[in-house]
Length: 205
Image 1: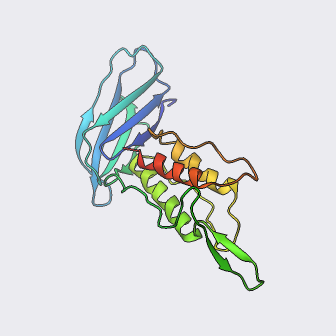
Image 2: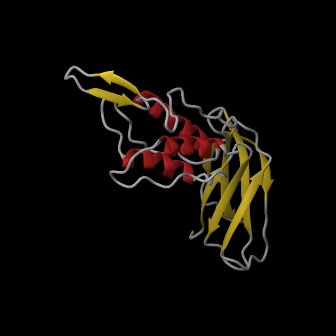
Image 3: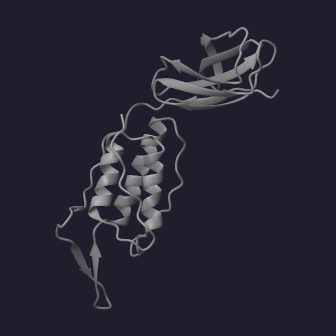
């Protein structure tokens, strides 16, 4: 069967992107709740499109319950493509706020190192890694897979490539508040950039 589909989902809906449809063929879509190891309990929705005259389709299933496992499938009257399972996120993650002093023009904490050099600490590795975890919580809430972030390590320089990963991961979710411009290789990672990431993430509804 040349018919195929992909899915994205939120806490209350699932969008199916169907490819390979043939004109004049009837198609079916179902979404079922799953419990007890995948046992299907009741069809939520079945759609029959007679005399389809297009090759691709987007179908949105609404009315899903947050924090609930589902299986979706697409097929013809005689054959299914194959079920895909997912669990709707429980709800929107809470807004992110920095505990470190990320203030443009603000004072910066410095720590004396054994070699007599002072290191400036704008943001701890632990807090940055917690921020990326929150980004993935938002991605799950919006129906996207986890982004594979490079973990920040204490005592290691933060690079443009690392912080730009956060920008990329947030961008996928189309936040209402625009993201700051990407940091060029070797460029300065400013408080304005860090706060811009936070503001953009928090604007997602």
